Length: 182
Image 1 (cartoon, one colour):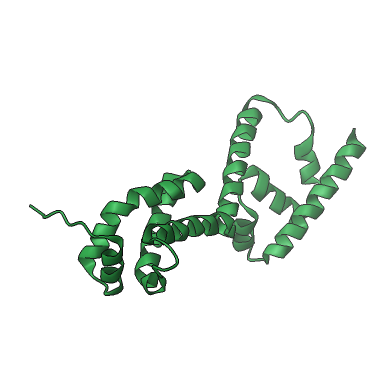
Image 2 (cartoon, helix red, strand yellow; image 1 turned 90 degrees about the vertical axis):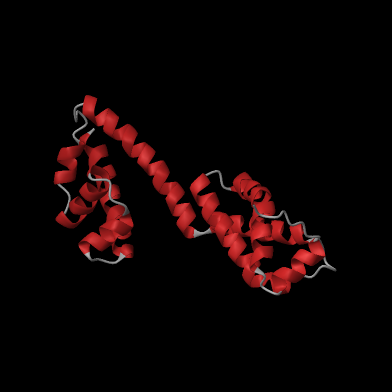
């Protein structure tokens, strides 16, 4: 049976600065729930929140030397690390791209549901086949097969900027041809 330790904040901070493993275990056991709550207020995805919590404890372990008791409580310092780490994830391009991809996945699912039941009465397929091959290939990979622009870039071994330029040109050409057909 393990003995229940209880540290005051100054004792805990001092032991953490000495890289005491038992103090770190105590810190995790007693503060992870509260810090996870802070993170989940900003990041609702439990898996991502767990990853952030792990990053927070690594930062605490590595940066404990920066903690200054004269500037505030240990919990306040850790709270700020957790909050700032979660905000950094939300601001990251990876997070933003993932959110866009999830939204596009929802749109693609809805489009697939619609295309199964509605025939191509608008003639879009024939308009796509009249595009230049380089445009047609990108449109088909993107809209028919669901590839992202980054994936298309990798798949076709062309720069991402080229994919974006061709996609825009293809959509403009489709819009022009569609308005002529009407």
